[in-house]
Image (cartoon, rainbow, N blue to C red):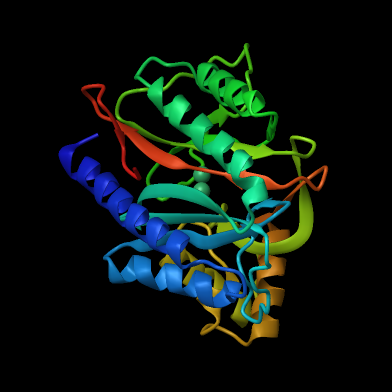
Length: 301
Ligand code: MN
Ligand code: MN
């Protein structure tokens, strides 16, 4: 990883941290989820970054991947637990970070458990740490508080314009997992904890997509072609949402095109993820970079 790349990771991390902390202070019951997420994305750009994916605002048993649609009328409920998960990129180099805010003291121990799990996990990261050891720490800390880690969600390696670059960092102990951290790479660690079943299922709503096979040969309508070309140009392989394409086609046509492009295999869909036991869910996330010299830099702290 050269010096320029490292600088971009660190700058993305700085912006992500500022926006995340401002967002956590700003969120409150009654706030429009749509206005809030648009504010987050605008703020990232004001500070000189670009959103690496749509602002995710997932409430209560919704664990991840909720971003408002163009005509979303949801607002933050009283006594809710809200996960704000945002990403910033500079020239494709990503900082991915999340915080949970709760509007009831009842959930303070859950938030504390997951925040502490992330801190303890970060303490053991070095260039030779095994991913399984991180999972072990996360699982044991969350269980110490009487909650469950969400076993089918986890951290990941990051690469340029790629959020999930192939390696997974578990939130539970997986003794046979062979992966290790490595020099010159970036990773996100993101424990999720719950009082529910400890795993998520896919819900019906899809609000996030990403381009996975840009060069498929398929017959496309003019609108589909225009939507596809705009996606390539604006987002490359980073996740996006219909809100970021509303200038390209009418809403109904845009939605139809996205579904069709997904069915043809150009796009992958990211449905909302919901806790299987309808448990309350908390998440905290940081991105870290390991330099060629082996220094661990948590860019979003
Ligand atoms: Mn994230
Ligand atoms: Mn992540």
